[in-house]
Image 1: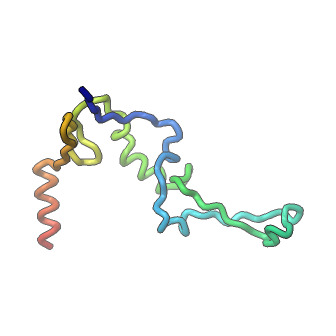
Image 2: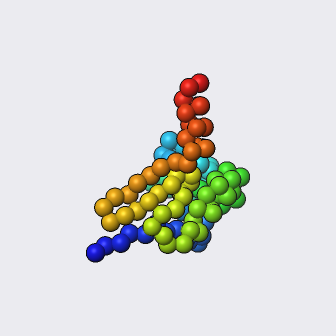
Image 3: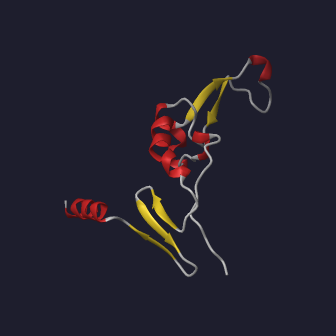
Length: 113
């Protein structure tokens, strides 16, 4: 008889755990100079680009996004819990998701606008 648990934990490499959307790669790149002695037939250019595929350490946005979800990563194993504002319940036959009444009302108000 299987039992599934909702669990989060791992702050190792904190920011680097969160991928950047491919549509945002253009703003997550750094132009780097290429030393003259490193240029050659395969890369004759004076600069190249490094693209962050994960939240980069030291960027203000990384800190803000990580702070928003870091508490969500320290939940103890349980069959139910709240993850980023969504209530999750795990049973042997189903995984259900729901929102609390306050959030439901807020969403309904936004949909009416």
